[in-house]
Amino acid sequence: MVGESETVSFSNVASEADSQIARTLLCVREMILKGEFSPGERLSEAPLASRVGVSRTPIRLALERLAHEGLLEPYPTGGFIVRKFTLNDVWDGIELRGLLEGAAARLAAERLADDSQLTTLRNAQLDMDAVGEPTSETFPAYLDLNDRFHAEVLRLAKSEMLKQALDRLLSLPLASRQALVSLQSRFPEASEIFVVGRDQHLRIIEAIARRQGGRAESIAREHAQITRRALEFVMSRADVLSSLPGGPLVQV
Amino acid sequence: MVGESETVSFSNVASEADSQIARTLLCVREMILKGEFSPGERLSEAPLASRVGVSRTPIRLALERLAHEGLLEPYPTGGFIVRKFTLNDVWDGIELRGLLEGAAARLAAERLADDSQLTTLRNAQLDMDAVGEPTSETFPAYLDLNDRFHAEVLRLAKSEMLKQALDRLLSLPLASRQALVSLQSRFPEASEIFVVGRDQHLRIIEAIARRQGGRAESIAREHAQITRRALEFVMSRADVLSSLPGGPLVQV
DNA sequence: CCCACTCGGCTTGCATCCATTTTTCGGCGA
DNA sequence: TCGCCGAAAAATGGATGCAAGCCGAGTGGG
Image (cartoon, rainbow over all chains, first blue to last red; front, side, top):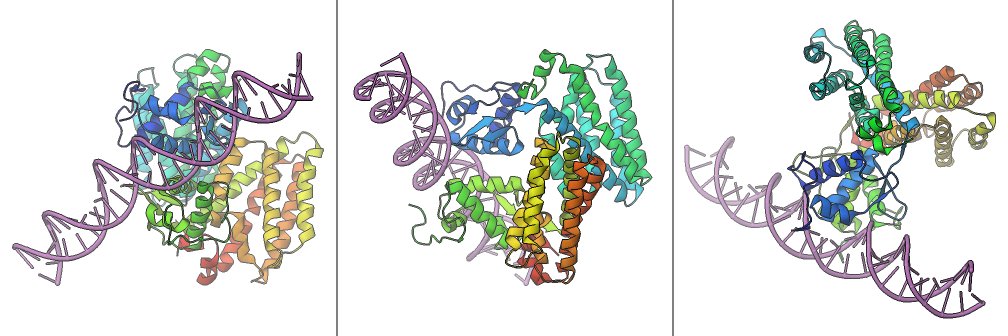
């Protein structure tokens, strides 16, 4: 066994996983997103290994993956450092997500064979409506269902390339929809944003159903801007920002 | 030492590299793109290790990277298999590249501070003009300069997110500009395509210089379709297709 | 007093070794 | 002849040992 004494089960989540590398991946990613390392800091394998409780081999595989995810970047003489993000990166990421999700909505409209394929998408929206305006309790469920809605649109687009590009982009947390947690009932404008967002979902379904590809693209593209609005609300409050997943990585 | 007897230096290129993993990466990627493995085939580490002449450790890292590149995909019970590509994947990839390069051109126009930043882009085009219509001899230089042109547009876009998304997409060879080699003086229409492509480059520069973001986007988006036209020419000839890098991976 | 050189610790890269799981292949029975 | 079963072979996942390279501190010389 390795690290027999100081091994700590760092995270409550993923304390048990199917493989060491999966556990390491979740654990290290969570550490990075929580801001336990400062941007630019070099991540050495040995300390991580003793912290996670595995040997260096899974650590290295996990670091490799995180580098491809974009959370780390290779260091010239070897190893990896924590990547720095700027606010411009975040805004550009959201813009790019709008571009890709817009393309997905357009393709979904263009490639819809028959209306029965829309049922799962409609059901996803119905499930979201059942949750209603999210509270701090129902927020995880809301986010899950929201992701499911967009995953359904992406599925209808039937483009593996688009799916991969979006998947990779969404792995960067501040540009992803997860950043909506910043809305967590902190601001009076939040309610307004949820209403608008729900309406956009409904219009996207409608446009896809009517094969209005261009319209679906426009709405979906604008819909991504909701994340930007949500983030702009919290930008003034550094404490809230740094509590968001990935927030500590953003240079102010 | 490992694989002391049957170690063969597989490739003339990259017989010498800075690290074992870099060598392995180039070597295995070339093998895959050359079609030495059939799509869906499982890649085992040990045979690769003896073929490349390294131990299993760098092989694993290289396979991990190739999986993130999209050339391999993880197999449920472990290991990786060669990914299958369909023709639809190729067309969608080109479409997506047009979308992203269009966005890059638009951002370049919107974010151009002063005209002096355009000199490197103009020089890239001048260098391409110096080569002229490529022959089989000058084709590698032509492709390099073409890539440089688009890299310059991307640089002017000043979006790290966009750069990463495009980099990842371009690593898939058939959707990349490298697929233009199919035009290698085989078809009478090739000359026409080069003239049109050059004009599109000039119009992109012009639109960026005039801060016409929407126009730059439109032209760049359409410009990507040149790859599709080039590929469509060779689609009828299976022998030519399978000689292209990555061509053997496409299911007909 | 400052610069350069050297020595030591630390880190990564790589190879090898071990255990567990999967796959395959041959044989047996229906 | 087909299908099931079991054992051997081989695959991956993981751990560790070792050597080479980098980084920094300390020291000696100019």
